[in-house]
Image (cartoon, rainbow, N blue to C red):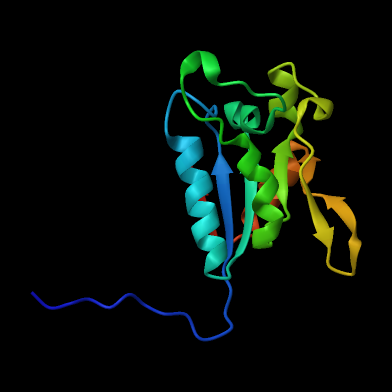
Length: 145
């Protein structure tokens, strides 16, 4: 059988990838698998952002304790995204409200300001449903988990 070579992007071409997280953080592998694919994509120097909608907003809730369900709490990994130049995490305002959550319920995730290494900026941006749709339309690739 002949080997098929994967297509390659011309040097310097970056795709805009948005990972859409719609599932709760525990009970399935979707959230953890999405996070792993996000980190892999960033390693290939693509322009990566994340969107959290529906039950996916629970992935960013602070103070998660998974001891009772016997699984590893991977939520602190989101704080490392800035090290991979992933600085845009969009959370849908309506999804938060529908689940009785507010911005204050989310983990503080920050990244270094590229213009001032001593300053940190928030990575999470809470946006309305219409703005989320616009952001999605601007991407080259949407990957939904």
